[in-house]
Image (cartoon, one colour):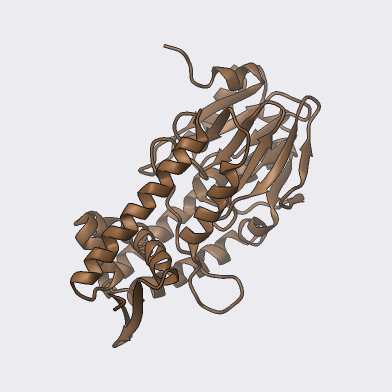
Length: 330
């Protein structure tokens, strides 16, 4: 069976599949054999993940101490957690998009603020206090898989990362997270995409707090779809994702994602046309028990589509005793 990553490896970009404790499974970390020797992401902060990372680098004839540059695709802990250890062992520069810097340099404080915001959102949209408290406890436990790190090179949209044998154009693609960044090798038509575009699952645009102090939720799905439109215009032969296998036809996959989100928005519209519902009631109607065990993920999915429907004037949001209720517009 042909290795789907063979074209990337032939160009000196090697996928290392690092274990995670999360349902998404292993995370793809990329070692780029170039000057400087570059690592893209690092995996979650665990001894097992660190051992697998070190072995993978050694199997390619290098050591952790040889790493000179780490590129970060986004702020999620399955990608970020080991970056500080890599930098401490190697002295590597750590490069991240400007939007990620406050989070990764102040990880504990920022993660707590995100948890507080998520708790408010869950209560606002119909999730019971006991379920909200339980989910926040889980989130606090997961925080151990992340870690802070100093960013020594701040990247901006349109910047170029120059290596000896290739140049990556930096493209900011918020949506799945507020800091999603992709790295485009235009000459080879290859894109290191993090979780911006995944073949086997649709990237979940997670609701996050806005950094303007307003307390409002981000319109993550709207931002994500705008980001996908920009990526669709790129000339690409191979997309190297943060999980799973590469994507060889990014335009078809993106069009499929657009169609899927349109169908889901229509389905949610039908549900609130039957009767007014909270976002959590919509999530339960769509996913049943999963809406309890994965409450914030499913709530983010529903609210993202509600934002689309609100923007189109198809639904209205109103307050009922401190809880938001959505209904179809007349």
